[in-house]
Length: 103
Image 1 (cartoon, rainbow, N blue to C red):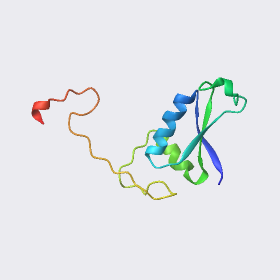
Image 2: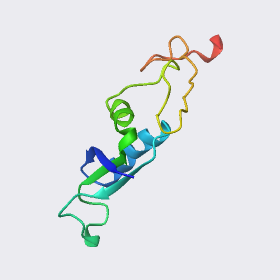
Image 3: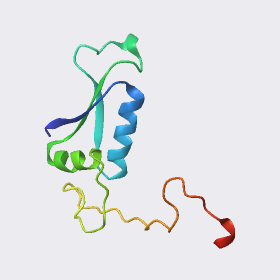
Image 4: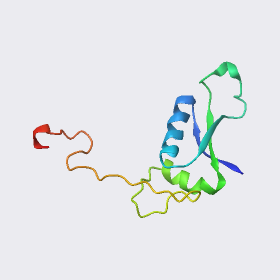
């Protein structure tokens, strides 16, 4: 299996966040230390590359670019899974107050 780099993170926590975005969409991925930074003393510091299988590259880039599934897509090419999400309730967008009495 050929792995390709789809993202670059400045440190381990950022790499884990990017991986969680991909894994939430069913895309297997891994992080590795960038060339020249593979020193165990760095621990969580140092840049990371996010890698996916070559057949998932396009799908992963779409996810990391902010694309969200609508249910009309076929899902990742490797397993064909789709992600179904509930539509947001009216008034549930950013910062909008929610009235519990109205529910």
